[in-house]
Figure 1: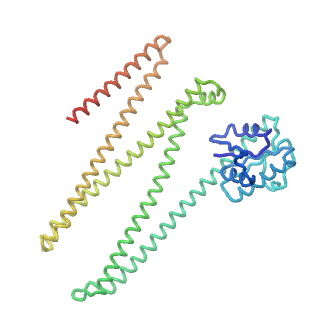
Figure 2: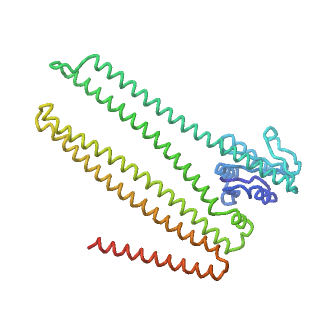
Figure 3: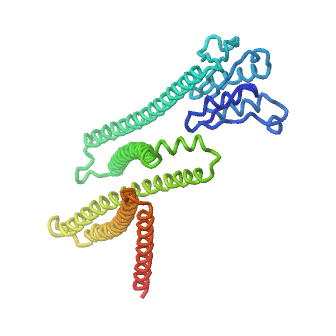
Length: 401
């Protein structure tokens, strides 16, 4: 979330203090002299358009500053043009409220009062939470409207196709001996409409399900990220990160934890993708296997039941063989996906065993015993990794032979 601070140079540290407890708040600096160029209004407007939130700090000198009032008017114009953007005015020490924001909501704050500072931070959090809710609600409404429009379009195509089929059967163009050019054209158009309706129905269903799957994946990954951070990064480390920013050792430890969080989120995404790939491959293999078996039965029944020539059964027989080959390929992909999942579970089991061993070190009474046991755990872990590498090399050498 990008925040543009609209304040004098003296009040910028106070604005940064207000935003210190806001997560993911990135402060956008004012345009430099090189960025301003010939028109300062264009440069300021460009900066505000890239921001999500405009935080205005209004003190007793604000009304006398022409540039700050101009920035405030530009911020109001930017908020009117973009409903997802929000302007938060904070009036310090009972200062005069500018006329352009007299009819809007603003926050009163005494700069020397810690209680007012805390209340102002809470108000800003509430405003940003409400903004996030409004944006999420708007996105959900837009997605629902797209889904509804796609469903309506599909239903219209289906209705036209059914109407055409009814008219087609009403004219009865399939009578033997009366099939002419017009009947052939009618039958062709009927088949084309039926195929078009079927393709539209399948496309609509797949697009709707794909959108829902994407939303479910995003929610699952977001929830997993929150639970992971709560489990791995305790509150003590978060407080140390805020208080001891100059301590390089603790900063490196926190950076390592953040890197571990990123890697675990990537692993979770890879695991979800592998799981879905395995399910899709298995479903495709089953469908293709049944379809190929059905085509082969049709190829057998054509000359026996319908008493047609064997040449008519060549096409479904070839189609059945090709379908079975596709089913076999899907089963190979399914097997590889299962091997990836098994590798993931094996690595997860080894990590849990190692972390459990390290956690049990706290049960020892003396520090010397903990050091000795930790040394043994690390040595055994290295030996296991080396043995696994050697086993993989031997397996690859055996496969190459």
